[in-house]
Length: 197
Image 1 (cartoon, helix red, strand yellow):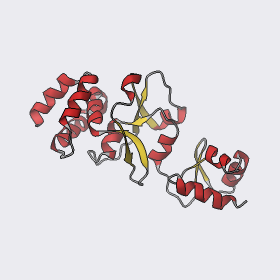
Image 2 (cartoon, one colour; image 1 turned 135 degrees about the vertical axis):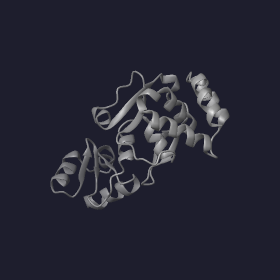
Image 3 (tube, rainbow, N blue to C red; image 1 turned 90 degrees about the horizontal axis):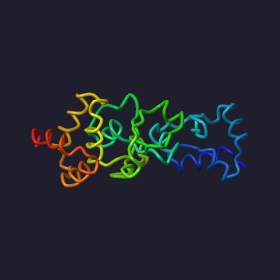
């Protein structure tokens, strides 16, 4: 078996990421991955994930693949929606309360928690800068999150997000209103939007 050809095919199909479980399904053992890593034919990102040396790692895709129980939110969602031009220093994800993300996720991301019944609200798929789809909240849900966490994310980010949302041709005020009611931020939202719209 030509391991490198197999791994290149896996990487090609999975946004550059080779996962241990995918490699195992193709008959490549953990021991072989370890051997290839020692020989510097592949690079380990985190436990269970590798990339080929010539590939650029898509950090957002790598994070999203580590758990099905996280969705990009807050500053990272603003960035993916093009509402913030700054790449976040630390990526932000939301998890349902009661779900504890892995140590690798906690080490790299700021984690927010929400009641499980609100976790999927506004979930969509967006492209990373490298062009891979990742789970993220839609624009309206992101604005509600930013309002809920305004004391943690900083006034500048908060106000800039609201201003850009208000000016966006893609905004959906009915959806925003519906989410704001469910997330109990209607009052605060109205206060700010009256000034901006």
